[in-house]
Image (cartoon, rainbow, N blue to C red; front, side, top):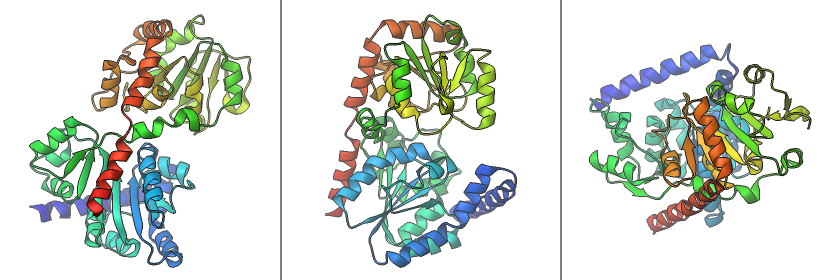
Length: 411
């Protein structure tokens, strides 16, 4: 049964990459992914020529959010084992293109296609002794090839739900993949219960390393002087990672000029087409683009990547997008600045959102009227922001637990 499932998996991966090759002719993101994956082996081989026989730890992150989750562990690992080199791979261009020059890793590339003849050659060349997959984005052949070359396999800050494919009766190959990990480091007790019910025991609850990362933001992000002066002593709303559905939900807030004197919007997609759609949705409200900043507008649209973290510092209230359809974006970042947080209703897969609501630091909004009333409530009650900051500080420490487990396993 497992051999048959692996065969189907390999066929599926082949078709996926053929489809990606075709899509790369028309789509920039597909082109970046296809070309980056195709040259990953050559990048590794060239790097190994100048770094032979040096111990390697490999971190794989699906995209930018997972990299930020891994970052405190990468930094702690390098501090504990300075002689080791860090190889970092991404699946998504959204992660690689933004962090391809980060100094925390020694080699950064896309992930090669998950086909056995490719992964076997790749891991014979890499010779990683320790492997971290961050949260999810598991690849059967990469894991098997790394293990066959003697690596210890860890999953960092993982979450599991009963609905995941790993626990379906017809998907034994995926459950076997989880069993191949030396240790699954979990975010919470709920994930532990799921794995225990499935008969797995190779796990430990360490918490979520994202808290360690975001807790440093207030003292590490670069200031934005233009926004600091423009928002000073003014009630300010920061809308982070917005999608069109979020802008629709905020329409009454935009119309009420007495509520927020300043509004900063950082859309999830900063392409020209996306910015044009956002401007259309603003329905004539005067705005300025951050790239051509002007102080005579009430709304500022951040039209580049990498400034949202800094912008949260100037918020009175933060709204985080994605939870009306696409998937909730990072709500921990504004909370780290002790800002009250609002978001849409689809949060079932985001335990941190439910925990923040319980802590009295965040609220769900379901429609424009609800959004407006919730904004008024949070502006009037400073306790929401204070509780948000406390929530973050109480959840830190996962990186220390991870490093302790690694230390114990090395003995």
